[in-house]
Image (cartoon, rainbow, N blue to C red; front, side, top):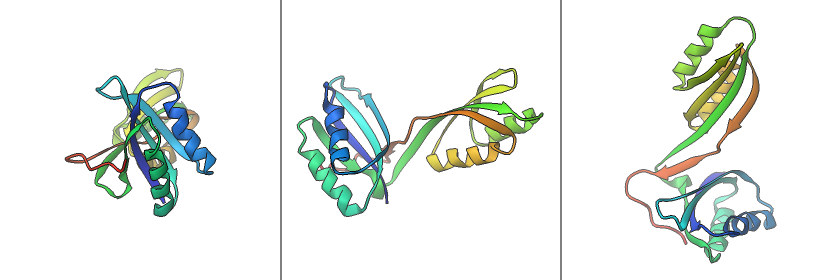
Amino acid sequence: MRHIISILLQNEAGALSRVTNLFSTRGFNIESLNVAPTHEVTVSRLTLVTIGSDSVIDQISKHLGKLVDVLTIVDMTGTDHIERELALFKLRLLEGGREELAKVVEDFGGRILDDHGGHFTVELVNGGSEIDRFMDKVAEIVETETIVRSGAMAVTKGAPIPSAG
């Protein structure tokens, strides 16, 4: 099962490495990883996506909680949350299709950031599955030259939920 785990950790050298090493030493892949400072300059929020059973993720969360740099851990998977991802695409029109591309980009809430010689740079902020749908849709009218995706970022709805760490 896919899990989105949000971790608050001390913004110190080596903190991220200790978290990622915990995953690698247990043989788990991190599918996406985002880290950025919070409103407190000494604290960063790490959001990662991984695949594993609930019991395995619970074990990993317990081990994460023992790391000195980790302040809180929340597995957002069973919670009411908002998930977003930023994707940037470098697309090349096959033949014509300029208006069709513009319509698809608009339908998905994206923006064309640059249009240069038949090459388009498109920005899309949405859930991962919607970004996948966008890629499938535009594949009919463009050649995708480059895709850059941020990976999942997530926040719970309403009041903060208690942490596991």
